[in-house]
Image 1 (cartoon, one colour):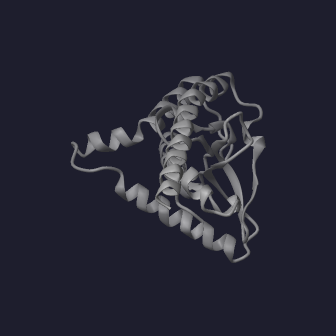
Image 2: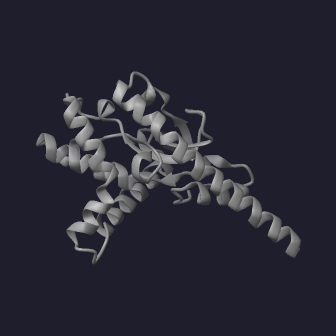
Image 3: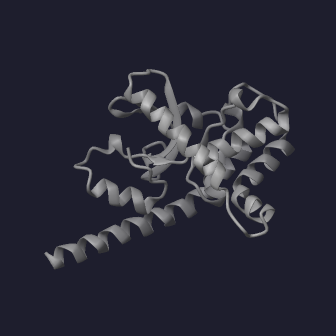
Length: 205
């Protein structure tokens, strides 16, 4: 189970995975941790009870929190949705500014890594109720890679959850379309990078 959260890493690992893509999925848990924290603060909820699916990828506007799909079900105003979405986009910058440039969100990243490892171990142990958001090869959109909620099992990715993208608000639909060009460009760079590396490797052989 590879901890790769960008198209460069995904392409590299897929080329060396003997086509077993079920074991290749990127860790985007830090975005989920951030979204959960901000929503819990905003709505005065217990953090342990909050789970916000985050789709797209993991940089700027490609991070798309699906507040309407969160648990527990909470009502948000349009202003709250926009504020939280933008804040989640810029969470990394917010932390760097709070630390006056002396560090980044290392603790939240460490927490996210621990959470992902725990979920992976539960899945490998046979727990049939393990879900997490992850960046992987996907057919949920017209892009070849996309982060979405997945079900994990002993054999890796057992299923993606397409229902998360059904019934989105107009604001979220617009945000989804807006992130696609940036993610598409990132995927194309990753694909081209791997292609060139393979050509170089073949020439060396």
